Image 1 (spheres, one colour):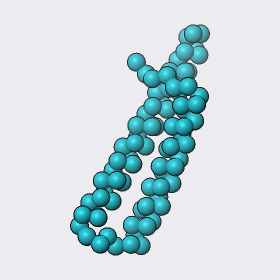
Image 2: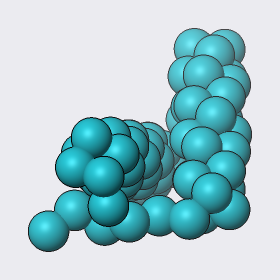
Image 3: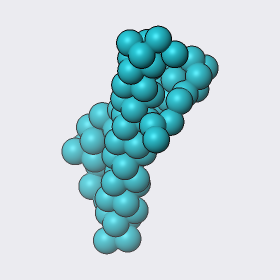
Length: 78
């Protein structure tokens, strides 16, 4: 069963996706300029980048599933 997001939830999810993407781009650019001080700092950067990507994918799946649900409901006349 696909989740049914309200307009407000879709707005905030979309905003989170945009902000997360921008932060990801900024952190990638920063990572090219700065060298990590230690192996643990490099590990923290890798984990945080991975978490950001997972959250973005979850947001995309949620918004996509909600849109598909709305389209199906629209054509079914519900």
